[in-house]
Length: 531
Image (cartoon, rainbow, N blue to C red; front, side, top):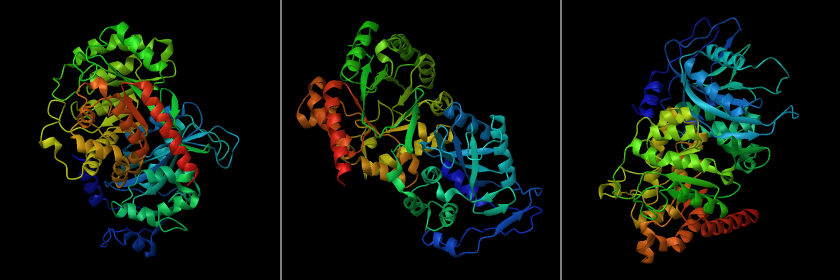
């Protein structure tokens, strides 16, 4: 069942039942449409739950949508987040959305390590105090002890919102009383929302904002997007034990095809020696990443089995990972098979690049979630043998439809346990697109972000990868039938894509495209400095 349908059913059923509480008043779903709903909630008289620490507040057999903040600055911070999410699911907290991951300077007590911060949306049948108890149990089980308030801690879990309720007891206040003064909390909370208000629960959360009309205005008053990227607050993606801030520069991913039939360089790098030499060349020319593919995804390509793909891939992957030059570089494996992904990461690969976004292998999302590595999700309709059919090339608005179709895949990936902070987006240039559609995507990447942002700000912030290198549409435009003759056109397309917002470019010719990327980054920095 699609998450949207599940969410709607949950929201339809979500009625709160009081138990031994002095004051309680259920907030009924409004008869108002979303227009004006936030205003309605602002002027309504919200009920408060008042109880002592000894009173147990329960939600009987009904689910509530909640928002929980996560923070950590002791030990392996990312592992602490992963473990906390695992324990939440065990204790009846069904996580469905993740904010971005932020590395932030400590607040209040400043003489301590930097924090990782994020937030999640979830459904739970636990009552407010039961939820608090579950989160405190997780904190204790993960080694948190009483110490300095606002001091170092392996994990910090706070209930920010609980359904549509305002709640106040001796031990719990909802919304969290200090949320409005903390950029490191508001930023990941906004990530959990869309720019469009999706339902009356979200409208209610907006209405809770103090000294502002909604959460967006609260964020702006704290400094807004100008805070992101500075030393005190960086949006990061965890990869190979490093927190990668992709806003600092555009990354170049060099392509290594181990296939006999790839459209550009099929058959050139099938031996281990040839592959190692090519990787050494690409790294010497400035590649930040190497993407290794052992299955052809050219139009009309015939799929090979996972076993055959691994027989091509694994020996080469092992040799590459032993190269001294690869130290500090990232190695990605281009595969749509979960078996291959699992084996590759087990050997040391850092990223899984899936051109099907989990459509070819239904186990991919779950496997990648367990592997805890970044996941590149690409837009494609059908598979390589069908993607260029007339049916798959039909779009009313290619950017909007690529965004909405990708969002559906990413939403399912999140529910399967791949957090937004591990996702990279690829709009799929050359896959289920004709020449004009590829051009639209290159110049309108920001429209794809905007369309995704309507439903998920976190996913709209994800790094975008583009792969126009030597593709057929460049040959059609420039009258270059041989793929190897399309490098100048590739440089032009990469330039257009980076200036439109791409963060990673996947290319065959690293040297020339690196120069293009450096110039684009300089232009963008200059443009930002004079705004």
